[in-house]
View 1 (tube, each protein chain N blue to C red):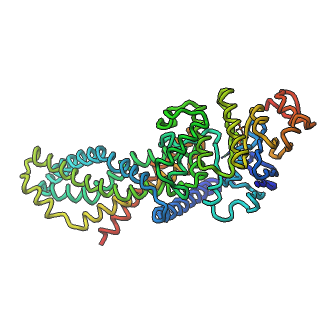
View 2: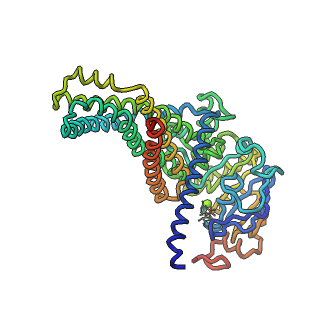
Length: 248
Length: 260
Ligand SMILES: Nc1ncnc2c1ncn2[C@@H]1O[C@H](COP(=O)(O)OP(=O)(O)OP(=O)(O)O)[C@@H](O)[C@H]1O
Ligand SMILES: [Mg+2]
């Protein structure tokens, strides 16, 4: 279970998170939606400790993050970055198997490569891709390699930052199914950021909408459409008019 | 208020300077402590050896050979003013080994290695690759900084030694081909004149300058601002800082070795 309690984060005068509180139950899939620049990526990075919140507390399974063994903490996580963040000095398969080639989860190189190939297959990439370098791939392929890397070590908690952005609808469907599978079969806890409402419906158990630095609405995905929240309503309908100012 | 403004400006810049000196010193200590503790990344280290050492050889050789040749010409014509043309081999040797070898190799490494380390790490930083490293339980200091630092500490002294030899060879070539020196006498004078301390100081300077070059590249890369502009600024600052620190360290080390 992940719990964010009254988290604040500002960059200079830009107050991004202003008292964000959210709970993600163990083994469930939470999808975070919200306008561009509302701090969704920042919230994920706060949980991982890549960004230090100004105030507030974050708990993972009851232990406050930042206390205890950081390596052991991070070993439980997988993260797909919004920009992919592949290591461009390493070929694709070594990117995917990065965790399996060094550190506490290290195993023989051929075994690691085999796992990498299997993960690449699951994100719909051909085996030939394995020996290319990230710069030789298209944007959507890079995204999927990032996804394969996030799930390679079968982490308990997985964060996906816009997993289907830049993918064609069919591939997006494949990825949505994959995320759903990881949560259902592996019992992982997932936190996904997406702008794609069909992904939301495919992936989410629960949905949270971030707006103005706070969680504007949260609840089960089934209740999303029936909610009377005007912000959420405007967002899922994709209307230009409403409480959220579209032209800033 | 207006009278105080320049003072305030000076005060602020001094404070900023002191703060960055402090940060860089802490970074150095941290880098060394990570270099000595596992986990180690041998593949990264071998890569760094190749990039910092082996691939720098051509530029180091060219720098040294031209400098040694020019040095011989200068000393010959300068020495002629007081009938001391004969000191060419000794002055070329001492000038190359004690001073020009380490300094010029150090500056070349700052230009070639510091800039590339800074640009590479800064790009990794702005494309979230450093964040990705952290989430994959890999400490950027151990994975990126430590191998480069260790490789520079080992290879730059070796490059300096190569530069010293090639520089002396450049002086030798000019002196024997153009200035009429006897080859055998030239070499004998060079070898007889150099003392072990000259060579030790050269290598120690090499290690220090190599360490500075690698650390400045890593430090400014890791602290890069956002975007392409951030990468550009990080690269520029890293080379500036490395070059200035190398020249300052050269002054200090020369004092330590030879001021008595
Ligand atoms: N390292 C940083 N330094 C300064 N400002 C930052 C930093 N990271 C994020 N921000 C700011 O925080 C705000 C939220 O950024 P964030 O990346 O979380 O947005 P987001 O909700 O993920 O948007 P998108 O859907 O477009 O990805 C933005 O205004 C951004 O400029
Ligand atoms: Mg984002």
